[in-house]
Image (cartoon, rainbow over all chains, first blue to last red; front, top):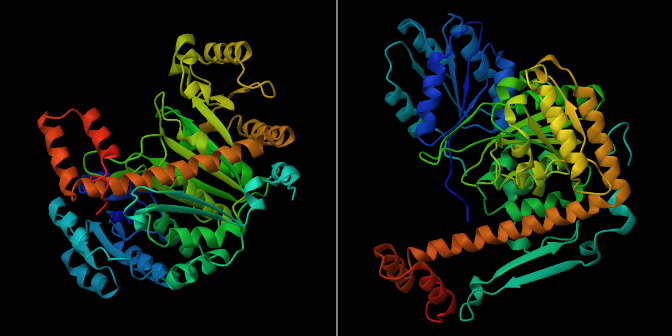
Length: 135
Length: 378
């Protein structure tokens, strides 16, 4: 009697900025979409984010960064997940990310990037459609 | 086995030995429909280490996960927890395979109203236990939305200091429809942590009101956390959460009213003790400043020792196993019944009639349970 699969999402704030309004709004929207959202708090190192993602067995890691360090922090999380054999986890990012940075982030395994002006509905739909289907 | 400070052995059990282990198998059959024995429900409690009952349906992936978990792979542990959470078909086999690794953990439940400081106390208690050389598993529970089925699990925010400590494993769980303050899968996840080798397992419940008491069905020691604002004497005399404490903690004890709260609780436990072998201690803490954590830890150790010395640990664990059995059975039978309500012609019609107010639910239940034709579980 396997129950319906729930999408588990880790919402993380890597780096040093202290602005988590966006992360919280998204967390609530994902909750309202029926997902389980683990929120880890501000100023996380990539190592901490990955440790939490592994222990919580999440399907998706969503990172919000408004400090400008996304080019370093997002790919680092992808790398560390891969090193743990968790490369099936969907990694997405958002925040103040210039359009011109997005292709390089995609190339490094950040599968979707939601910059300024993205709608919440768009992000929720993307996560629902792209979360890995696990047994 | 005896470890310094916190004694985590099964001493209490070893003295007498639970009777169920003297049987190689205890088979319980609940027949729910005479004409369709394939829908009977069978629960088999087996001796640890015995060969699998139905090797033909063994799931290789799950078996592999268990092997990896037992050799220390955190990701495998996390994935097994997900199996238990979604009640996958592999769970019985997983549980059979970890059975021989159980028995080394001690489970402490931390419960109390929202905002009492459960996560902070869990965090600081964990830090203290780590200083004592103990490994710790944490199950942090937050509520599932009854509207969307989603949840925000935010207890980890207060536990960041442990993220990179391999001696601490934290798992957030949503209640997923259960109402006792704990998800139904909590017991299974606790066992996985124990099999993984965690010595102290802390379960932090959702913020509870007066009647969410499921924690006592899982924890060896239940800590009820209150704050000075939690209420007056009459509140503390009410039934429910106040009756399940092995240990009261008044957290945020630097706030106004803490002295009065402590005094009233001490009077209450003195007037009315649940057990003649244990008078519930009442402690004061300020978890955010790390005040009172050593005393809390030591008192938990003392409670564990008393449980062990009096044979009560054995009694509790027998009760826990019985509760677990009943809960699983109830869950499976309900799922079967609910599935039939939407499919079976007679049940469907009866359900309709009840919804329209044409038949009262009492009569409908009698018909369902009595009628031979209705018990055609297909």
